[in-house]
Image 1: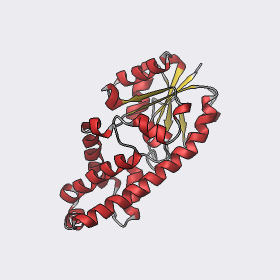
Image 2: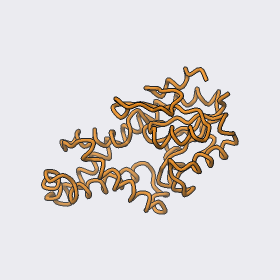
Image 3: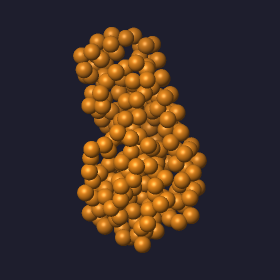
Length: 241
C-alpha cells in the first residue's frame, strides 16, 4: 500500500511544463524564435553553472535564481548558439541583453507561480492521505523556493541534490528522500516528468512509479518503467493504488 509520495519539483510540482519548454515559450514570447533542440545546449549550460554556484544560490529566492539561469542561457546563445542567434544577441549591447533576460525571467516566474498555486490546492488534498516528499535535482535553495510558494506545511521532507551531493538518476538521492520520510520503497510512489531520471531509477529501487507526461515533453514517448501515466497533476487524486 502506497502511503507516501515523492514528487519531482521542476515540471511536476510546479507543472505542467518541463522547465526547458517553459523557457522556450518565454523566448518565443519576446520574439526570439528557436527550437527546443537549439535552446537545450544553453539550458544545460545554465543548469551546470547553477550547480557549480550552489553555495551562492542557496541564498536565492525564485526571482534571483531564474535571472541567474536566464542570464547564463542568453550569454551561451550569444556566443555559442546558432549563427542567427549569435548575430542577433551577440551584437546587442548590455542594456538590450539585460532587457531580454528580464522579460524572459518575468514570464517564466509568473508561469511557475501559477503552476505552484494551482498544484498547491491538489497538494492539500493529497496530504490528507499521504506523507509528501519533494526530491529534485536543484541548486541548494529548494527549501526557500517551496517556502516562498507557501507549500512547506504540506511537505514532510525536501531532498535537494545540491544539498545532499547526489543527483538523479543516482539511487542515493531516492534513498535519502525515503529516509527523510521514514518509509520503505514499497510504501512510496515516485512522481516525475522524466522517465530516465525519475521513473527508471525509482522503479529499480522498488518504488511505485508515476510518469507525469505533461505538455509537449512526453508526446510520442513511452515509459516502460511507469506503473501509472498521468497527463495532469490532479490525476494523482484519482489513482487507485
